[in-house]
Amino acid sequence: MKKTYYLFNPGTLQRKDNTIKFTPIEEDGNGIEHEGQPRYLPVEDIAEFYAFGSLNANSALFNFLGQHDIAVHFFDYYENYTGSFMPRDSLLSGKMILAQTSAYQNKKKRVELARKFVEGAAFNMMKNLKYYNTRGKDLDGVIEKIEQYTLALPNANAVDEVMGLEGNIRQTYYDGFELMINDFSMEGRSKQPPKNEVNALISFGNMMCYSQCLRAIHQTQLNPTISYLHTPGDRRYSLSLDISEIFKPILVDRVIFKLLNKKELQEKHFETKLNKCLLNPAGKKIFVQAFEERLNETIQHRSLKRKVSYRHLIKLECYKLSKHLLGMEEYKPFKMYW
Image (cartoon, rainbow, N blue to C red; front, side, top):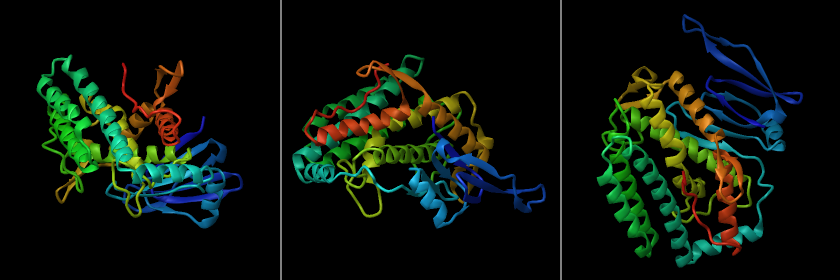
């Protein structure tokens, strides 16, 4: 099975015959930079790269990556997702683009899809809340409030109304983090910049989830720039935002709860500068490893009658949306059933 590679060090990525050569830049004990030991990666083993440090590369490399359908996702020093190199859209279909555009321009169809994304996200959030509610955390009030917002979804007849309900649901859900997480406090959602450890993890994890959804969309005929809950905009893949709403509670939040409550991430894994809290390199590695393990975890799929990974579930969600847009079957968002 192909692997995802995470590049935490700055360095040089280049083609070497039919392999990819990565030469990291490392610091010695005196803070002096030098080239580290090169690593050679067989191209057939690579699914994608995540680059967290500055990367030197050239067009020959990207031509080679494009030929082998290998994506590269870039993050800046402050853990902000800055963009992706995506191979040529060989699967893009004119028929699908027309279907996506038609559903977006039809107010009724767009609102229906927007409601479904929020419905799936809210259900998965409540699954997390109910899990901890049965383990000594008093979350009844939070659950009841989200249920009330969810009951109002069918009456939301405009995307702005749906987005308003989604915002209320997520804010209420984040209020429950204070009870679900031990030793750390969230103190409300803050981003750009995140002001504490919990917010730093949410921001970092959400970007990881977003890029996974983008990759899954790219492996189908869907166009990532045409979305329904989030308004399409210049220079952003807004359909990834739509689909990631469903998977953030399953992938990102579950990883956060595990790492903090089991003390695998501690204060020493964060750094705070100028009212901004970020994971340090050691913290990033711990989170990324746990996130990758979660993506590769498998569940017994009810419809397919076989085990599938969470990573594959995202792609299946894209296929379900494709079938809906082409009029083959109604889209039903993925909901945790265990």
